[in-house]
Length: 98
Image (cartoon, rainbow, N blue to C red; front, side, top):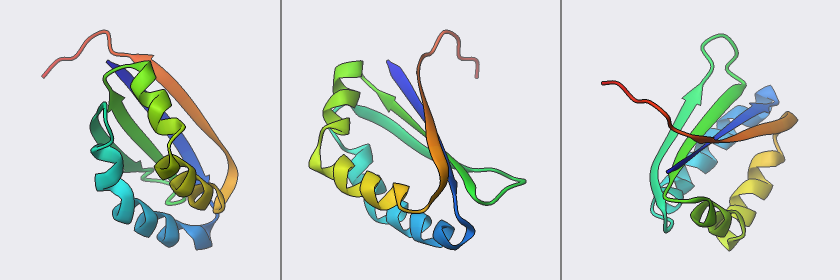
């Protein structure tokens, strides 16, 4: 499993638009082939900072999504509101405790 974390900082006037965009597309992203989980977080101290965590069966599944029409459409609209360039990490889970 691969976990993809993306940190995004938006201009204040773009926050509501991003939240609406995510709400409209979250089910499509979550049900894209290979996506096992999708989470959205907002920073407690800066309402303009968001993180997405997506869990993928493999890197090839993530890459299929990243080369899809869905990603192209959503990412174009998302990055239009950025205050700075997004940061992204692909991680392997080593330990999980419940």
